[in-house]
Image 1 (cartoon, rainbow, N blue to C red):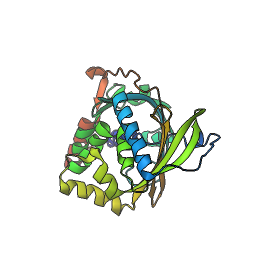
Image 2 (cartoon, rainbow, N blue to C red; image 1 turned 135 degrees about the vertical axis):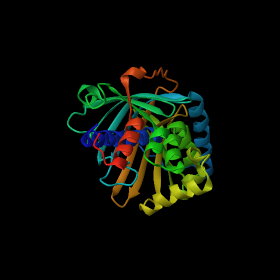
Image 3 (cartoon, rainbow, N blue to C red; image 1 turned 120 degrees about the horizontal axis):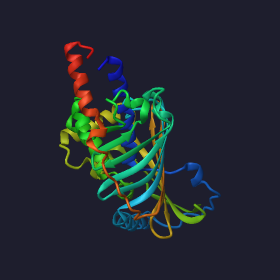
Image 4 (cartoon, helix red, strand yellow; image 1 turned 60 degrees about the vertical axis):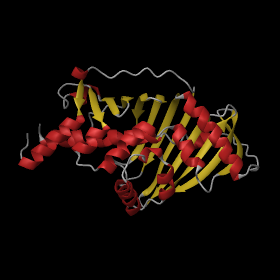
Amino acid sequence: MSKSVKRAGISLAAVGILVAAAAGCQSGGDSKKAAEVPKKAAPQSSAKDARTALQAAYKKTSAAKSAKVTLKMSMPAGAAGAAGAGAGDMVMSGVQSWDPAAMDMTMSGSAFAQAGKDAPDKIRMVQLDNVMYMDMGTALSQHMDGKHWMKMDLGALAQAGGGSAASSQSLTGGAEKQDPAQQLAVLTDSPSLKHLGSEQIDGAPAEHYKGTLTLDEMAASNQALDGMSAQDRQKLLDTAKQSGIKGYDTELWINKDGYPVQMNLGIATPQGKITMNAHYSDYGAKVAVKAPPAAETFDMAEMMKSAGAGAGTGGDA
């Protein structure tokens, strides 16, 4: 395998990991759609009432186990956490399950630019637990032994890239536990949680909530970091703080049935603002996901191991 092909593969992996992070967070919806002829009522509930509402929504969302989702993500150039991927926008739409973790989505957007001119306009991605499969199309399959599906085992990728337990947990934890219910649980712990009144979402009334969390508050609430040692957890936090990230803002809209229909997440970085906006519908939707046949998949973790071995010997193969 040539150095150019290795670099192309690593760029694809970077885009895929960015997708994994976005899919894991599942926080947000279309901010313009959120403002769809809003008719705000003066906030009338206390912080305690807001937490009670979010706790009830958490129970319903957890029990639903799945939903249809459209996720929009915008990443500024050089933003921390971009996993080497370029700046740009990404749109994902499809169906997601969080118990068990699975999804079937179609992705598009300018964030895939680093994959090169051969990259397809749209990429289908399926996820089963910590493993993602991305259909990279006919042109890119020429760089993957003629196979269309790129396999990304998130835990194996972290190890192949020389990552620590912290980096591995940050990837796999997101795939396992970051879901709408988890985001509700985290927002419930925000000391600044507020009920902003009622607005129209999809032509129906929805209650609007907003809260801010520092990195330390997020880490204390986020189950995706459970199982990490105190040292690895602190290392992850220190890395985020050193990059200039202090915390994030979350806005949430809950419909009359008690389900979140939209979540907007904003993270301020020195390079600009990262936004992740998702719109949810059809809670309890069926998620029937099957992994592609092994003969049709190209293992990115194995390629990264080979690339690392080649770099160590100075070879181009």
